Amino acid sequence: MATHKLVIAGFGGQGVMLMGQMIAYAGMLEGKEVTWMPSYGPEMRGGTANCSVIVSDKKISSPIIVEATAVAAMNLPSLIKFEKILKPGGQLFMNTSLIKELPTRNDLEIYQIEANEIAVALRNDKVSNMVILGAIINKTGIVKQESIEKVMEKLFSGNKAKLLPLNKQALTAWEA
Image (cartoon, rainbow, N blue to C red; front, side, top):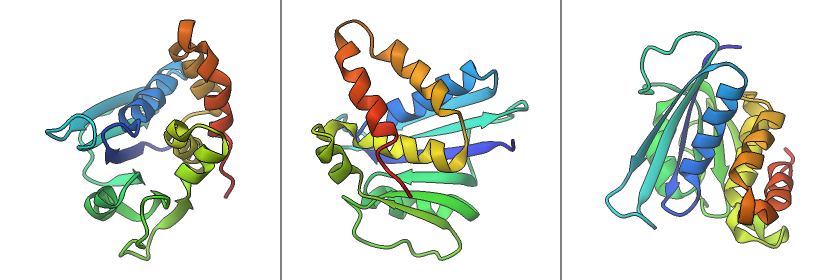
């Protein structure tokens, strides 16, 4: 495996930070080197939010991503801001429920995912982030799905345990 450099971006409340944390925790479970770096806009809910995650077999010299191998854009401002840092041939995951424009570049592997519609079909519009997370895992190989599910089992425990089946279902809801 090479080093995966992923940026996940959207607005506050979309679960962007959770997605990044879950990938970082899953990488740790797999014995890999990981970094997770959050970045919040000035507002909490509704403001811009992004995080960068690096997962590698070798030491990571810096948590800052200058050139990403993959970007997940949950809304249009995120696509506009982060499309340009993708390396040529990089993977772009777009939430086309909220992004109606196409990327400006044609040297990328593009995955158009109607995450909100898929989440609504699962009867909970809050799992659109898990739909995108499943696509990222499936297409990048950054971590194994089993590792993400183990992380979910830790996160969704106690009174949140009832959310576990739905979130696991959302991970596999999108098919390319």
